[in-house]
Length: 103
Image 1 (tube, rainbow, N blue to C red):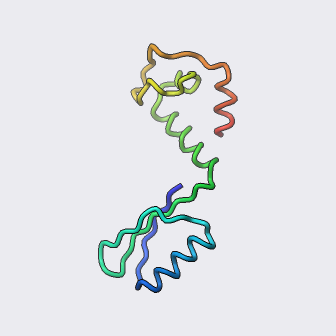
Image 2: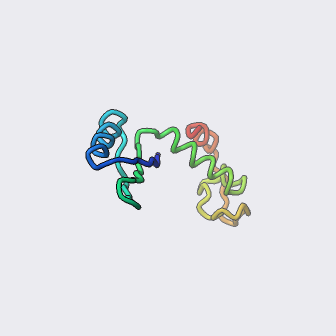
């Protein structure tokens, strides 16, 4: 998961802040931008939260795919977010187990 934070301070303070975020909170730095002097926008990511990632994917699927996609063997491969059924639809008898694992 990604987290965007803004930091105001000098480079030494930034170093201490980043060490705290990376070592104590176990976040990794994805990107640092500095639009103006002593002002930083930092994008962190945390790969440990698999449940939250899966829930985001399921929420996206519910919002953007047709109802049949949630039980389709191809799981939205052909729908493309149009919310229309497609000719490739093929029921997956294990879809309930797959979806319950995501939740």
